Length: 205
Image (cartoon, rainbow, N blue to C red):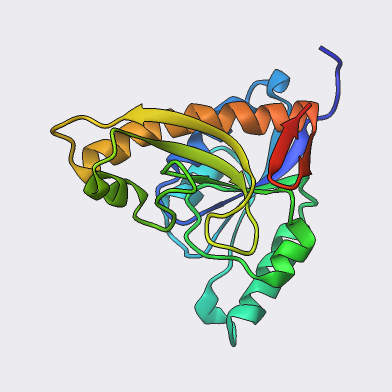
């Protein structure tokens, strides 16, 4: 493998940070090609930030309520992320919808992992909605964020069978188990090989 500098990314979190941990673990291998430059959150005192701090990764918090309105928050978040000059920004369980200013700066390189097979079941209750609908397979979707809600161009998807006795919690956990390696694989591939977006098609390499 050609010896190149790892690609800097910023990861945004809102909770326990299990997706983040998968990226932190992968980034310890120089061959992965990714350096987590910073981890940001929309709230303090969460495990996601603690995971970053234990790994020696810089952190920041940008709370909506500390700003006059959502546009001001979006501007502040954009500025904080831009400080680290990331090649990509990853939403790893970040529960805030970014605005126009953020997408102006990072559109086309802001990725989100969603716990459903888009375009079905967007929003924050993907596994619950899938289970209630009676689908036989669920899964996770990695996509490029646009101005809609879970409507961006799809990078990758993985399928998780739904079991007859599934609960929302059980299905959610099995989706997470498939979601983590998918996120790690494709963030690494996009960092190492580059990617392009043509309409709704994402081509890696």
